Length: 151
Image 1: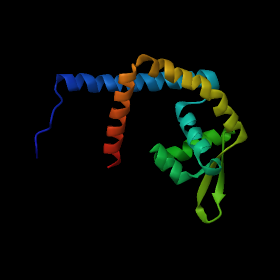
Image 2: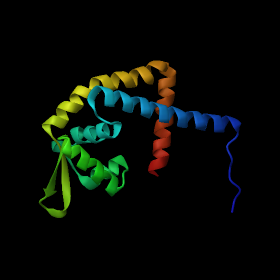
Image 3: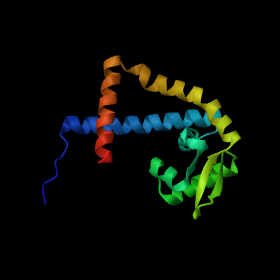
């Protein structure tokens, strides 16, 4: 077995800073959404995908795939969202084992009301702190890492 390629001091600092940034951004965005709209960041992610899907609905397995969630996590989360009237679950007529997840009118209103404050928070916490060059660099880095992850 090959020896691990340990991170040097700069790589270690950058990696830990990235992790801290991710945790803090996620926590702050989650708190903002909770306070302003009673949505969690994960609720928001589900609703975004549904609003962007054809006919505002997706098969449950497709939603799990794009969110990169396990089936059980998605099922529990959707059950809570359904109780709050944000989504509906309907059986798929062509596949009795499958279900469609659809955004409800209340879910659409909730995300439409939440989105302006959410995007302003994203701007304040991330984009307003970056220069144009840093913005392009972040885009390049994100694209490269995402491409590697998709391999």
